[in-house]
Image (cartoon, protein in one colour):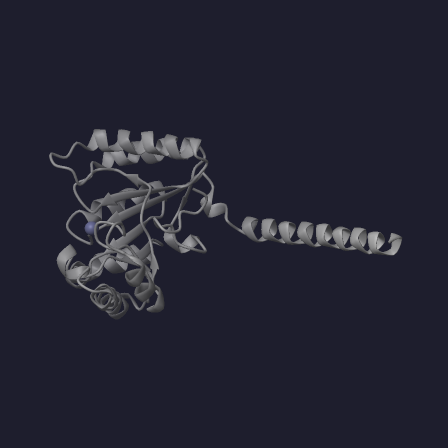
Length: 243
Ligand SMILES: [Zn+2]
C-alpha cells in the first residue's frame, strides 16, 4: 500500500513538472518576436491605388520618413507603373487588393477571389520584380471570406490583412480633420486594449497637412511605424493577434 502511494505521489510529481514545462514552453513560443503586436506599433495602410493622389501621400511619407503598406489594385498598378516603382524604391510594402473591386465578382467563388489576387500579383511582379503574397480583400474579409474562401487563399500562399482602425476617409462628404480625429480616438481605444493599430486609409485627396500633423503627434508618443512585411503573421478578423 505504501509502495502504491509512493508511486502515485511520484507520478503526480512527474505530471506537475511536465505541465510546468509545457506551460513554460508555450509562453516562450507566444512571446517570440511579437513586438509587432505591441500597442506602440502603428501600421498605416492605403487601399485602392496607385492613382493621382498617391504622389502626395508618398511625398508626405518621405518627408516624415515613415513607411506604410499600399494595397494596390491590379489595373491601377498597370496604369501607374512609375508610382508603383516609387512605392517599392522608397521602402514601402506592396500588398494586393485584387482586380475588379466589385464584391459580386471578387467573392463569386473562392477561385475567383484567388484568381484576382494572382492577376494583381503578376502585374506587380512584372513591373517591380517583387512577388507580394500580402493581400487585403475588397471591403474587408468579413462577412465574405468564409472558411472555404480562406482555405483557398491560404492554399494559394496569400496572407490576408484587415484593419482595426477605420479612418472613414471613404465616407462622403469627406471631412479630413474628422478622419484624423477618428484615427486618434481609435488608437487610444487600442492602447487601452494593449494592441497595435492597423489603420485603413485610401489613396485619395487626404489632406497632407492633417495626416502630417497626425504622424508628428504619433512620433511624439514614440510610436513605431511598421508595414505588413514586419509582422511574422498577418492581422485579420480571424487572426487578431492579442485581441
Ligand atoms: Zn478598396
